[in-house]
Length: 480
Image (cartoon, rainbow, N blue to C red; front, side):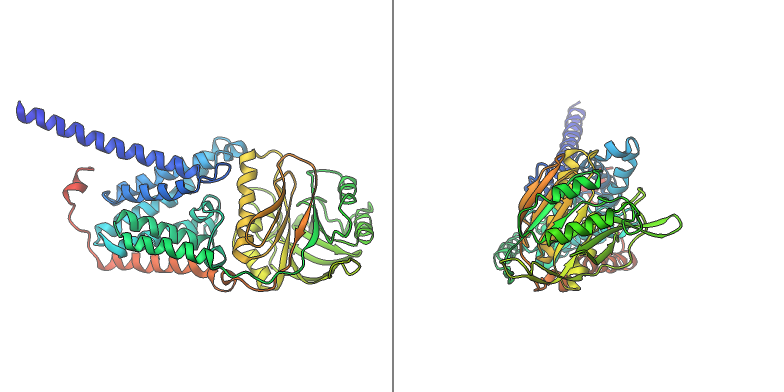
């Protein structure tokens, strides 16, 4: 009876231990969701990843797969709850697709430990590579790529973003938390110190004299509304930006006089106008387009590169180039003579379009965006964060005209200097500067996730091909 009683106590203790670990894992997934807007409690993202890594330290690969999937379902289901408003029950499938990637991360970490990478800096490094590699595939490479809620995005205001980008920040953060969990405190302290000092030592680019810009925020409004609101822009405004789909047809082929009215506005206001319209490609095909008109002349055009998944958003544009413009020659301030980029909405959710425009010489960016009135407030706020990140990565000011908000004027550090909240119609004015100097991220920092993914792939193949699984240890057996 004594042995049975002791055995019962041991089983109860083990059950409670496993239950507590699972509850802690659940809490960490919920915390990860709260690290993003509208809450933005970014330390929770670090703690959440640390708890997940700690859970995986004593798990078998299959347990790691299940734990990672469950963690992902909770984190994405709560953080991206607005998806239900769009897709209803299909949202469960979409959250499940996103959860596959933390599941693969869990399997990779447990597999590496089972095949001999048990402790030390190699394990911490492998964990960071596994996190960055799986996250990068989810966000940028898979067919249903979805760049929201990645670890680096939670760490606003993003020190070192202009060096290593959002995935580089996520890599450093995951490496630091893995070092803490594996008790490599010196490595964790070194990574933390390097991040803080690197953020303080970021170079300040040379900026031009600030010049005035104006955003018109309105959705599905008639052209006359956009024209009338534009006439309310302050004197000497050099740039006016309307939202995506402001003119939801090919304005150049219209015989209703819309193009003439728009051209007349640019002549009378003496400002460059960037707005969303369409380009007919023949037959039923069309392209979502940002058109730029200055002094009555079309001087720039960009076809949206990243069309929105699962929606009719036209054919993908093939190029991401900047165009030359001269603004404000009649103003008191010095005129702007240089190049401008005009990415469209979803283009700014990913790294490539803005970076390519800046490489082509864009000194600032004017962005028409479609943030629909049917979106929840949470979706509006989360989407607004991605534009700020792209500004911080490339050290470029950005003027974002969202149809129903959040419209923003963003400085080169990714900070909003003026904004117009969601569900409002109106005029937003402020100033921006042009910058010619290229950030380290724009030159080479964008390669960080590619290097991490390549290193992870090589290391994983080597482990699977040349390293045999170790016999389960007692701690492992207890999980069965």
